[in-house]
Length: 209
Image (cartoon, rainbow, N blue to C red):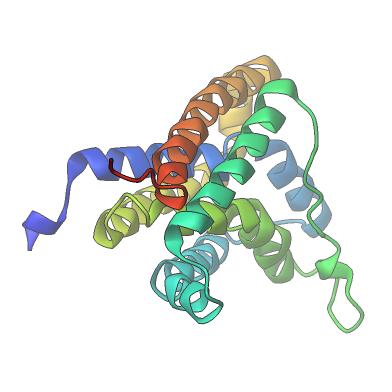
């Protein structure tokens, strides 16, 4: 059983997902959500995020196959998404616009903390489009069990941050949060370039003489 688990692959997948989820950099949004809703439910947000990630980990490839898209092609597209997410983190700009108005959709109580714990916390803050794309892209070079372990480890980090948001913000300060965000942005940028280079050659194979 343990032969399926590769510490190197788990470590790589963990770092990539940690950088993409960027739960530490999302602390200001978490605080804003808590202020609006009065409280949040860390366990609910974490479990919903975990469910979304696991579903796409095990069913996402089947969806791509049904659409006639191979994992290598998706990995190249995913590497480009990671590249722009990294630019956001490093340059402090906003390229992606996630719809975070769902809690105020007619028929849903906009001040319900249970709703806020799902949208925008679980989606799109934790398990957003970038995270889903990353999980599917990692499938091209990392075994599924190792990605699952990396997801579970990240969920541990997520629930700890959600529980200790105020304390972490006071400890790191605004400057500390910015430094961490930019540092992981650089790491993510390098990973996106490697992911692109490792898969683009499969799309344009060179013929043997």
